[in-house]
Length: 302
Image (tube, rainbow, N blue to C red; front, top):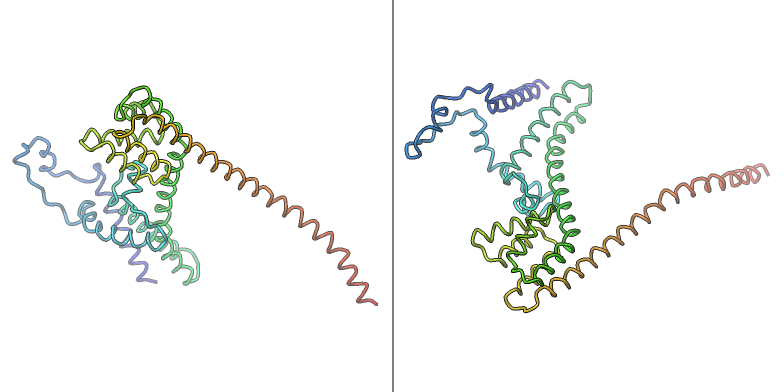
């Protein structure tokens, strides 16, 4: 118990030191760092970092966090690439920063669980379960939150893609080019597809071909309706009436969305009958039990 208390104290001290080192009000900035913005680019030199700082700790923990976090995610059933999921939801974090955030939350949960196990009068087995389960729970909560954000983004794209396809078909039928139509939809819209199309237009402006940029979007979002739309748009240089093909694909996407909506309505309708059935069966069983017990008494008395 004393060793666990010492380890908890060391972990808390290390965490507080790292957190305080990130605050400018507490951390003293060296003269070299203060003069760095005014130094010429050619004469800049990398200043040596202190042994105990947030940057050095991040460099040490980064490979361990990436490798260990990926393996833990695969163990719990998450097989999709982390970079793809972060890129899908337009997150500001890269995979390394995301894994470091998970490691930080796990370390904090370990410290809190250790303190709680020492201060609360709980059995040693339960205390050990809290100490080991709190870091895993913190890690999985952050992973599950990202998975939910990714699923919600895919659902938003699936819901918006029929309208976006119809608008794209009308623009193409009016004589607009594919690149101009995509830019127009990206500028005028405010949904998930508009943000994705803005990224597609940015990739096109960087020199990537239109079909390649759209294929990146299809591979990233992993929505069947988007995959079919991109396959139709790949015929932009071969088809003479691309607007009609896109409009037909929009009708197909709308039928899929309508079918999924009906499935959701049917499932919710069936779920309504569960409490009704339970509320009906329980009083019925009680009413049947009364004469049954009375009959048993009569037969036992006879």
